[in-house]
Length: 248
Length: 259
Image (cartoon, rainbow over all chains, first blue to last red; front, side, top):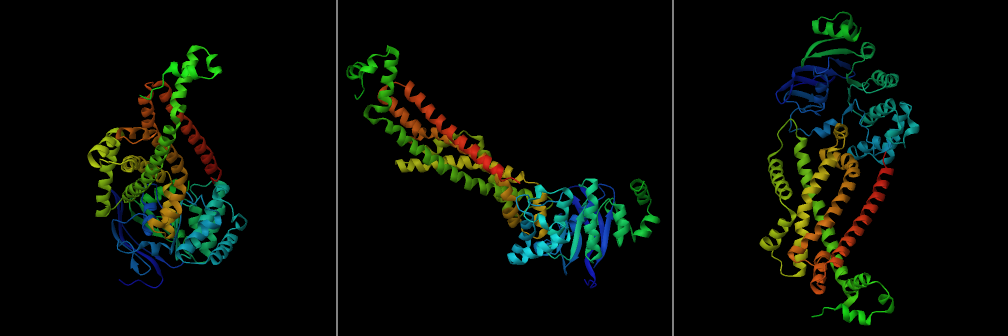
């Protein structure tokens, strides 16, 4: 198996079942360096499951996921090492409530990358500064708004220097007025060249930022294209129906 | 033999006793022969010592057993899609048998079996160890459920966030899940300690001289049950109230550090 140098993740015939429920029915795609892939689809289509399979939060039941030179779908691979290089942002933020923001951001680099406390904290402050939350370093997550929590969650993942960032509906749990601040951070990140895979319902964001939009329907990729073509000239009838609903 | 008679006592009683009505005179006599005559209060203090030793010993043992069982069960449940490894399935099988048997039989029966079938201790130390083992094994089954529900009360997203950063299962548990679970576990563990303290009264069936057994020993000397048994109830009640107060204060402090 040879992977081109600029491919970050290569997915081959990915399958996932929960018991008898066959959710992913063979997904193959490649995510290139610097690409921003936005995944859309109706709820229950398997888009979140697909994203969660990429870092094996859900163990795939079939197929291969090549990342970092190995097939991480193979259960004999030590997934923990590879997860360090894949940042993930969740719908519910999942900040650690018993730790300060600073500790949230430094615990993984210190314990896993063996960074010194000083180095990890300096890096955390720099990242916090980038999202305008430097002054909240010593606060606890419960003292922050949803938008602030999600911005922290993004930089917490970035503190591990990941090769790719996975976003699982990062704005779905936010109050509408806070969606913008999170999308702005993501836009900035995309412009800096970060490889990103994003499951979202924000079609405006997809149009503006995505390098490729993927429509997942019934466990397969039903259509994928550059955003301009994808939104203006959809081919798949299910996609047409989906877009007419969400863009209406 | 050794029984103090009321008439003998009243003849030597101080003047203030004689001025009391007859019913109260009798009560004072009962209290006197339960606590003061021949330093019988020492029965209560030596009994309480055994009660506390057994309670604390059994609690420590229960916590160790409970932690191990809870980790086995939680680990097994963490495998949702794939089958857990064989060793884990075997361990979990025995854990479930243990929980079913221990929670499905009365503690009294467990004590009788341990004291008269399995261990049959001959010395006081042997009986203390037998009591601690039985209560500890029993408590472990309940502590396991306390710890497991404490671990399960932590949002699943927390463990997922930990794993997504690259932490192993053990690291995620240690740094992220357990510190959050402790806030739920400690208060419930305090309640378990109170239950355990009251349950130690059962060890008298294996002739262990805890405070209950010692009270019975006093009655066997005075032939009067009311004052010793009521006193015994008050002793347990006072200890439980004190422990409850301490736990409340402790819980308050835990909640204060809640973020």
